[in-house]
Amino acid sequence: MRAFLVFLGMPRSKNLIWILALAALGYFFGQQPYVVRGGNLRNQVLSYDVAGYYAYLPMLFVERDLRLEKTWKYDMIQLVGVHEHPVSGGRHLKFTAGMAYLYAPFFAAAHAYTLATNPEEAHGFSLPYRFGIGLAGVVYPLVGLVFLRRFLRHYVPDAAISWTLFALFLGTNLFYYSSFRGAMSHGATFMLGAAMLYQADLWRRREQVWRLGVLGVLAGLIVLIRPVNVLIPLAVAAMFTMDGRLPKGLLTPKSLAVALGLAVVVGIPQLLYWKASTGHWIVWTYGAERFFWSQPAWIQGLFSWRKGWLLYTPMVAFILLGFWGLARKKPAWALIAGLYLIATAYVTFSWWAWWYGGSFGSRPMIDGYALLALPLAVYVQRMLEEAPGWIRRLSLGTVCALVALNLVQTYHYTAGFLHHDSMTRRAYVYVLTHWDFPPRELLEQPDYESALEGRGLRY
Image (tube, rainbow, N blue to C red):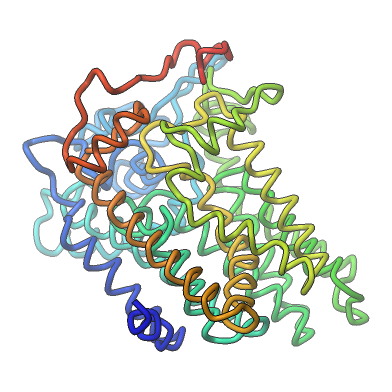
């Protein structure tokens, strides 16, 4: 074990990212989520939420059907959430268009390839498109690791960065949402959060005012992908403006107005789309779905066998332990990151379906992993530099064990052994010991009707 730990501690963080990239790409190509099996049109890439994020692209560039009034070349109704406005009756897509911005380069490449090789399949949902969008879901989180490394290298040594990236990527549900289901929004939002930290750090460190405009664009895109993630740019802004005095002229009313203006510009196409499709500038696209702010499912969201964050992602324990060290090193950052964690958990677990449908662990919490990498990195640094040898070996050995557990769980969820919304303690133990589907009587399906009404049975 000691030799194994030494080996893992050796790769430089830059080299480790290549190893992690090979792991993600290997799992992506090995599992082939872009291949439709058994005639099931709901493939593992362009289906459910991803199809809803993505549908803007074929809607605009293939079908040219903003109002969703005609029959598409591919029956997207089986894949995409389409709602009708309660007042105007206008048909519109359920999700906002942020992820479509990020998919666009991969869509363009797939569309050009398909037009050149098989024009009849250039409808936006054939294999080249599924492969391209799936590959986008692998690339963006890996880019996030690059940004995160570049940010952390100014605050912790390279060995601590390597362990942090290793633990965060392979030891949490980020790996699943960067490979098999990478096209979901969470890996991309992780990347944007890491990019914001990197750009904000350079903005203040190099006193480059223009980077505030970049931050505005990133903030606008994060919010357009998932509006509740406005908490991420707010946290980053607080970290780099409240932690010490800013150099003179770095933050002026004019530069702030430019940044906010660019953030708004990112969202203008969404407003134009809503106006064109429904006649209204602002649309609540989720129908009867809503938040229950007075009934957050704290215990269930953190500890339940159905989808508890700490239970399915126990690596979070090291993040929480790291807040003590971060408070000693950067008190303001510890306070802001802690408040962010509490606020995002409150918002996440106040949603009517706090388990978020079919997901591995609590997937919305992935969005803030770049911010939460700070306490994790500080914890690792303290283990490497200050802890007695036996504590260091125990801690790093536990990290390795939790990575192994996460990879086992990832396989179990990919195979369907871990049920997408109905797990119980007995079913979990059965899966872990038998590596097979649990008997139906061990599962407990949530009551979706009660959840929508906010009744106690939603837990």
